[in-house]
Image (spheres, rainbow, N blue to C red):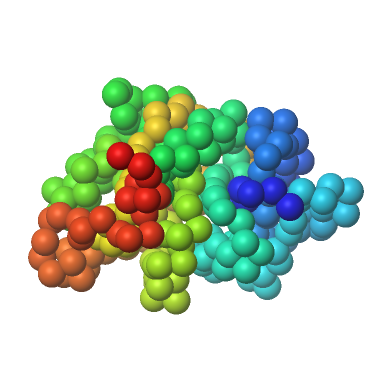
Length: 253
């Protein structure tokens, strides 16, 4: 078993699953791969089973029905923590997140507790998005920063690397959000607990095939969530003291 686990939720991703597995294995051979499939009717789960039977680094977690991105990641986190992985990634199945960036995020995690792959750090690196979608994403980032105080350029992004200490500290059973709001809430949970969070620039490319999971419900959930996070943090727009489990806190001066 490797030290790192790449968690990839799937729902109707049969067109991508073989290619993404091969790309992850080639780009980051020091990581295992877990597909979390929500009962895809197109046979994605069966394809993953066939691949896992041939590759000991590839795993599949089947769920009976579609429950949302956040639920899938939480299931993947619990699976990975139970098997003692030290680094747990979030990554999309549609190549909007490049597997080639996995080693860069893992390297950054050597000195941080949570690494965020940022589309907007030092400029805009988004390919094949319409202007309306880009403006929605940038406006969401500004809105999250304004309300919560989190200083990150891309709080809604879904390409991340967690140290296991972060996920062990966050009460995963209390996380109720999905979609963009899940990404915001998980980062806020780590930030308010004093873990060290860094951003690494990535290039984001609109999915090559299949259909986007974006919806107005996902956007609406995120708009309301940030106010809840502000209240949970006692109306403070600042993080808590450095967490004693932080990698940065244990590093020599």
